[in-house]
Image (tube, rainbow, N blue to C red; front, side, top):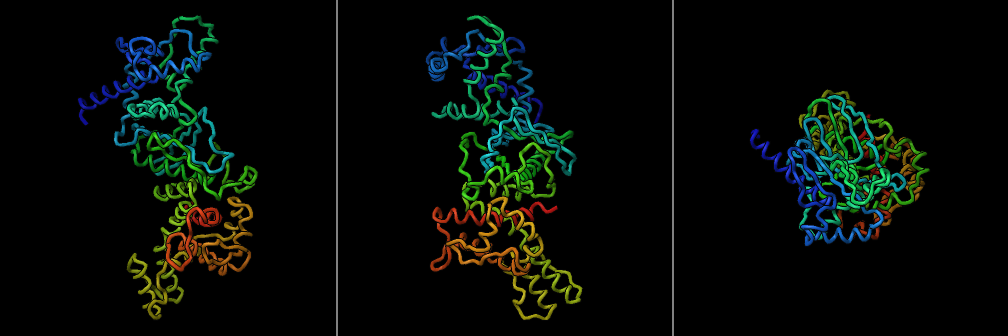
Length: 482
């Protein structure tokens, strides 16, 4: 981008910022003197813009909040240079959604708290929580807390002002009535009189207007490491927070996505006492996270987060199953390699294709065709053999669903003919029954064939929810293996 184009973009961004702040403060004709821009707070409500729809709305607000309405003549000010600095941050990555901002060494995103456990959901962030986070590019800081002014301004620019629900949508994130109360409080502290003149920072009022819904996740590095690297770090951090604290931070890509979804059925009834008694999975955010999944793939992190925060049990089960399924081919190839080596032969698989590996292993071992046939069920069994600690599965089950170990040992879901799983038995028997249980449920919810086991949405949601902790714990051991 040339310097002339950059300057043009910054000027355009400043103009949009002035319009957005003016609408929030109800001054549609701010004054500009040199480097300073002044907004008369509520200044356009009763004068030249009387017919503006927003002015009519504000008059109604004055009646509703008469006891909180400012009595002084407030002027909010900001410098053009300050808006220019914010514009440089705000438009650092123009292809990002209006809920993201970036700069040379940071990225910030609007997030929504999708934590499924009610007792720790919706934490208020008066000050940001700061986490030191290792990455291949060096240590960075991850901050969770109130959104920055640059993100607030980018959001304001993203609202559709022609929408009938414009004010309702905006006020979910930025509530102008909070400004009235804050100004009135300042007047009381300083004993202002009616019509007295007073000044305040326009940027300060943006922060005042921010509701508890307006929280962000920000990644900062000491040196430039690239936007994509910082996005990957954000995903890995979110996955680790979900694993260790069951706290789910979901990026908000559209400003209208403001309604929290219903948590899945399998989390109902989980209380704070059970959480505190667990192995640390439910620790509250703000403590030092033990895991630093530097090697966790971003796609896997997002699948895991979708599973933890899923609004329905089908999505939860399949999200975790997809994490287990990812390594089926490589796990099966290792299994074939081990079969040949255990026979005292030296062999290196010539292909990354699991079916080719099976045929080559059969040939080297002198077995009949399909003796080592690659199947999804067989691959799942090998993943459980190679990557899962059964003792930890048993110890952790009650962290997600109290009494679930007894449930798996004695009961089956009504929509699938699957075996029970007795975690106190022989290891090979446990793996066999665990494989058949997970795979049987997967087939019943994935397929819908006449005359076969099948899951019915809504009817079997709660029953399916009881199966989710099992696949979640298996997926977590694979994803967060240390």
